[in-house]
Image 1 (tube, rainbow over the protein chains, first blue to last red):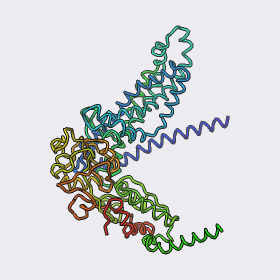
Image 2: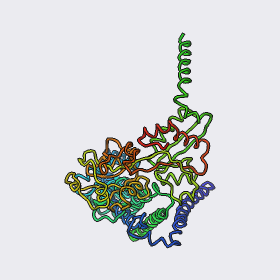
Image 3: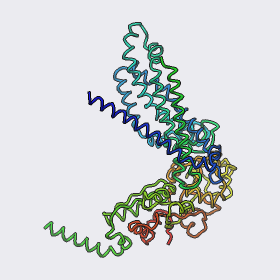
Image 4: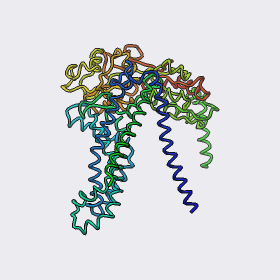
Length: 282
Length: 277
């Protein structure tokens, strides 16, 4: 009894610490961005041109780049992940299921730099050949690599939900005479919508936070792309590029603004998805 | 029997070392009796020099540990300024703000040229300075306009505060901004990889990093190289600096003096740069 109380306290403390950490990061970011507000530099940061030596520090193209890249990867990865999860859980023979899951588990542990590095030598030249336009470093290239990166994360989380739902519903539905495809479509997927939502939120977090894929593959041109074959720069890549070269000038502060915007994007998308989730609740 | 032989050989080896050391290791003598660790970070152009020097120093005196990390010029200033490393390398002179904020001291040790580069398979081997400006500004967009194949020019650049970018932009591009759609690459090494993979690429990088996988373009007929940078006929050059916060500590002092010594100068030239002496 007493030990249960302690476990509860410990868990509570863990939750408090992690929430407090996230909140502190937000406070520090705001503190670091504050000079921009007071010096009136905010207008120059929230604009569309990044030409620091000419006094233009706009990071809005990077905001657009981050959103396009991560949402694009999410749109591509989610249906794939649903397909893989359903296949593994319902359709695949036992041996294939084990092999599939092992591969997915393994994929989650591949460092992003490997994806980036291999893509520079493999995917980028291919993209250059296939489309007779652009340099191969593009939104589309980074999106393909990023899809591959977040796919296993979404599959793992979604498959866990699917397995639970499947355990409770399968026998009943088999008795009712559902075929396996219609069982997936009419019972399994509708019942695991919330699990999918959690998986998608996690996948989005990985996509928007990833630095190396976009830094190595997206081309980093600070502009709004006019097609998927154009080069883009994400907020994370922008931070990496500026930190690597600069240290003290005025435009160094745009890095903190980028960080704050990333943070806010994550919060907003999370809230939006959660709202969507509660409207989905049975 | 074996034992005496062993002793004999050790003796010969020692004798040889004793005779040879004043010649080989005179510049390393300053590390005699020093110990501790020395952390170095910053500009990526400096790394080959730092690594070679560190290797020689650590085999001369195993009590000294030297770590060399990259990161770029900005990281060099930041880490040296915050006291996180003993020496922070930069590929450009420090700005007034940086000196004022951190109280850094700079040690100029090498001259490095920055050359326009292209894929080795590209038939274009030289361009006029004005053509290079037009290409990087986006006024010339196809290789056939400058005597090359019928293909689009893929422009690769560096972030504006990069040391490599600063000299190329200031001394060759006449401070004209690079076209916005250019791919921005994060380091000298990554630039080499990107350009060596793309037959239609043009970029620029430190002469010291250039090897067979990319081709340096002649500018107004002058091929960028260590020789043309020394005699002043190739003008796009910069200095490489080591920086310390305030006066360097004894070990950092010894390291800097070593890089500036005769043997250090040898390492600097072997890495493709020109020593400042």
